[in-house]
Length: 151
Image (cartoon, rainbow, N blue to C red; front, side):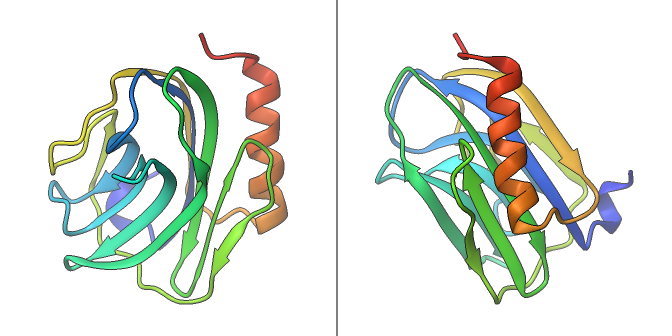
């Protein structure tokens, strides 16, 4: 898989963060926060699948609120105009608009803007195709079942 040619894909992560607030889980970017596809927590503790292109937010899909010291699985499936996020086997939250940035790198537990994960990643999966909404929900449930509690 070549990251610099991903026009579509799916990013899944099983993780635990020791704190709330802005937290980086896993993401794809070009070395800047201006072009990024990320799983993260927002400043309001929302668990987000987010996409930014040219510094403009294209999507910020919430799959629930984050608590400190809690295990989660989150996923983001993307292609231009068809973006979905799911967490812990829940239904996909979708958006039918948004462009996908050019990316060339993978960050685990950090973002170029300084967000960091204070915790650990149990597993990260990256596909070079967009899972369907149902597949995304099922994959987030299956990953949680495979790993059991992330401690």
